[in-house]
Length: 197
Image (cartoon, rainbow, N blue to C red; front, side, top):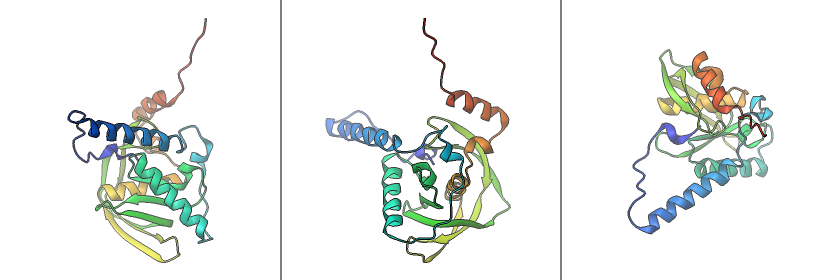
């Protein structure tokens, strides 16, 4: 999920050169990370991920890579399918911006309250669409070493968990929005035809 849903402060481009260099470095890191994240049109984004059965070093390395890409891409969540791996794993920030890894995640409870908010996605470029989601959810799963996890989430962290779980089921935000927003998003996502003379 894209972090542009939440502004974490002012981005001042003025001032001393060091700040500008840091901004340029962050932009370069973001571009490098996005180049490793699967983009709309990649068939793997429409595939359902498989349950994780091996809790090994390879799984730990995958989650470390995902957390690095999520940070560098300025995201707040990332699913394994977005990096081309069909495993039921996602990473995200909780309300305190603590990094969380959930393996074999399941929503065991969804509150009755819903809200519509604008969502972006690291796999959909600049597209942002309104999506209706539960405001409160209970997320369960296991850690990379197989220990049980349970999170009571509300507000935007609940939205992020639902967004990332959708990825693991091959669903995208354009599947969850209204028809008009979907049409506009698809128009943005379709490659533009270049006519040569």
